[in-house]
Image (cartoon, rainbow, N blue to C red; front, side, top):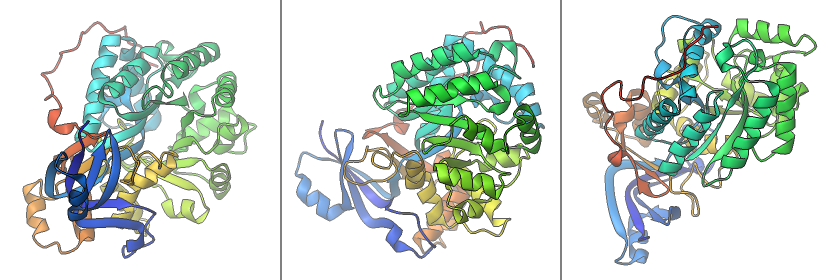
Length: 452
């Protein structure tokens, strides 16, 4: 494969910014370049220096005046909920029963799962997201569709079949044994195949019996290389219900701790109403609390207290949580994150936001050697941002004088239109995406739906 030299204004992080003035946390090249070969970053630096050493056989793609950054990373979302975004008027438990459990029953159909998986991956790419950790449905077909679509695009994706054997429609329930058997088979098929990574996924304590939590513990012991993903303390009614089902637990967090599900590869969605004891338990286990701002606002769940997690030494990440979350865009997600924290008197600088979307989320996943920055040897997953993509942004940019201002304008006003191009393992992807087809293109033969 020939070498590729991407020219533009390059920004990549080496650490978490301590303040808006912390220039030691990132590298920025006004006329920079990223040299790519065989899907990997060879070197990042000044364009003139790299052009001088690459020779005549390199293909130069000039993205000036756009920004070149690592591809965005999303640490919590639900691929079967792609068509359930913007479902009106319910908080968590009612929303699940009214909309989500109905929607997820469609994924028994291989044709439907394949169609949505393809559109899901393309929506991520349109928004500059090159890697994500997502839940599939309870059906093995949905997992195969998810990883097949990611493999077709060569995306580094984490995912897994949800396990749930109670408090859901019959059509969405597995059993402890089938949940175990299906998960083991899917791990064997997909984990480590190409760029695929598996996440053992008991949906949450409400939808798993103690017997299923026990087999989840067994799966984690048998497959320590896999991730664990579940939900924790998103909604006050949810907390009361979960703790009533596990009365011997100290609190909601202790339910997962008692089944040895907390660890450095555990991603816990939401974590809004945790006590200091619970946050300290996450810190000790090095588990990750996932901040989902658009979802938490849309479902009326509450406000994530990021500073308290940092004070107690707990790890955090940020995510869209589609379809409770209202956008695939990490830019729009960070716009809402800024507001959620601002209303609590907490500051989120533009540099901190872009760190969180890239290297910060890569560190949360333990994948900082592969993704999240443009260091030599990294996978060449790259996003190109246009800060003048919309007329209102172009007008606002006329008054911007610093990189911090530009980043904040992108974060606050940007969306998928601000993503000029996306590279996955060095291959340009956004410009080659098919335009969405007309509605009703997939087969209508889906299983009979049940309500809870």
